[in-house]
Length: 328
Image 1 (tube, rainbow, N blue to C red):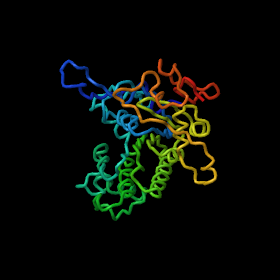
Image 2 (cartoon, rainbow, N blue to C red):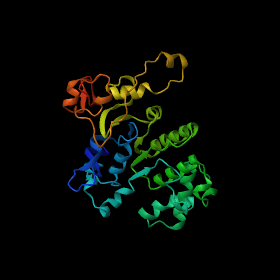
Image 3 (tube, rainbow, N blue to C red):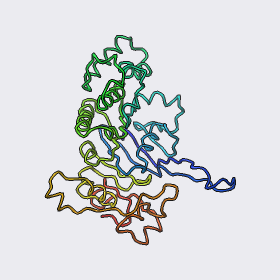
Image 4 (cartoon, helix red, strand yellow):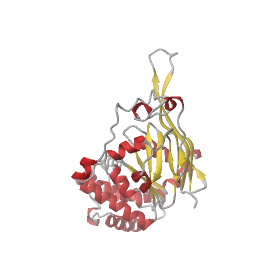
């Protein structure tokens, strides 16, 4: 099966200015995304997890040219999105839509809900009549559990969960092939998070969408994802099928993240062995040599400082990749 998205050696760097005011001092560079490669199959959900600052949101924005990037992003087996000019990229924007972390900040406060949801249709399908646009907007509002009689209200009149539903409706109104969800539930209450995640799963099955789902909460990622990719300082630490990654993680960083997920059974939670990470996340301006995780890794050895481990598959699972000199 041809992947819907094939990402090879994706890199995003930002200039952080000079080390001091002297004009001959070297420029500082932040490698926000450093050589990330993965594939996304049609109808699949890839979860992306990692600490704040590891490059998750930058990666998502790089896929759709919201930030400058190097490498290749092949969409639908034919087109490298990074090689396209803004004009040539325009037709693909209706096929790749994005949901953002802050639902209220992503909506124009001067536009009504109906105008917000209809905007992609007017941009990408200008041949539709006003009546057709309004009918499709009302149908999509009902699909995301918004009342059609709220079509003339403004974003500030809605709760956070309702604003996120508006953002989902806006993204889905053009029937995209790929939906990128950049921490869509992190700003919501726990009960509302479950509703939004279940809504996304239902719509994905109905429309046959592929999704990239970015989150901090590993329990949410486990619920919605088919495969999970773990990032640390802009590099992939591990990527595997959801069941394999949660039941038998091979990278120490993945093990630490999973051990931090609370279990809703007091006896099991007390008996569980927690793997605590020492120290803070290193500065991306001065990452460690070799393996970027070695300064916090409980099993780090001399080899870890000398060379960066390649992302290699496990002997017993060709779809389970780990970037570690001593996996498992």
